Length: 230
Length: 322
Figure 1 (cartoon, each protein chain N blue to C red):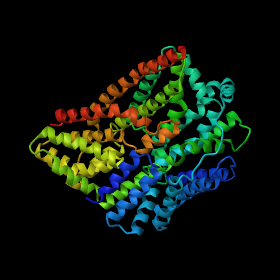
Figure 2: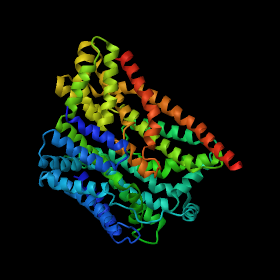
Figure 3: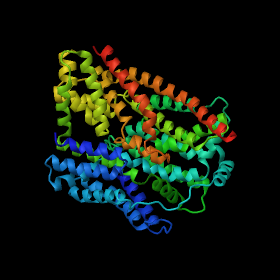
């Protein structure tokens, strides 16, 4: 039970908003020591863990081109394009993005989009452009709120879309674990179809909240106007 | 065979080149330590190759990793004054290039998909052309290279180093958050090695109300979500919660439909992923990448979705799996 102190350290560290890298490193060392690992074994764990998880950081290879086209006005162009669509609102746009993300992830294409590839260069500026068209003004508070929900549309879309695809990590993990632990063979397809009801619920709940975002932004815009009028 | 390792080296190279610019950036108050951070990060991507193929003891990389955490954790990493594009620059670019600006951006997903589907199937001399299981990473790497070449040809920026300067601006904005997902993966390994999973499993066994199906479903789903919040990853939570409740109680005792129990259980875990800073690649890196004022902005937007989703998963499992 002592090893749970490491978990507690992480919780406290994040709650106090200390530098997460420091919190995680110290929690890792403490947990390792409490779990009876030698200092060398802990260093080895840091080395292997870092080496084998490099794939999560590969997204940085898109930064040179994204930065380059941003310099030449990509975000501006995304805003202009969306401003021509009279029916576009930030909420509708983000809900549509979530739907696209869910459907493509369900087809096994979960890595075609992401915060670096699509949300920062395209989805966020489009939503901001739609907000500017609709409310005539976009305050910093509104921009921040749009950023939160743009990131959330991407996450919810992937999480509750990809499990419908049979060859995704989580489905394979379920099949492999049940096979090795209990010698029961489950068909990946049989597991994946049970992700469909949750996917529909996610679309309704988060899609609905994204549409509701339009009203929240409207209120934020109105409150700034009334303050300006004073 | 084209290997993912090549693209890890490309990432390493990008970090090292950027560190060169940071070292000589006089607008950065901590340019030496900041440059050291990016250089070490680049080196760690290359050392990783030798750790993975067992030609180097992992503790050497372990020391580099702890040095990275120490530099960033003690505030030795700072940004230069590299300026983002001005409004005038962006307007002029959009006037000149219009919709063509989308071409390099859209090349990335299109090429990635082609690699993940068509090129994945290509075999050369009886062996797959792309390293198995790494097709999308390779696709993303190739796509980025093609997109940057296309962007340079189209936009003709004044300096050939423009993409590196722009990448540096974005990376400096992300800062230490770029390393956090990998550090958390490491922490997950340490948690598992030290027996955190077993400890949580033992606690969970004590809270199962005996004989109640609904109670067991609730404990399994909520346990998956909470454990995922702690570990930052539903994959780590699944084997432990399933061994504690999912298999012995829900499947064996209550005769639940195993595929439905496990699929929905995993998705209950994903509700936890939506709420935790431990899932840094989903929740913290995007906050940095979008330059949010609030580091926990994405989580704040997701929390009111995650809670009803967890309740929905409990209901779905209760009604569909039994």
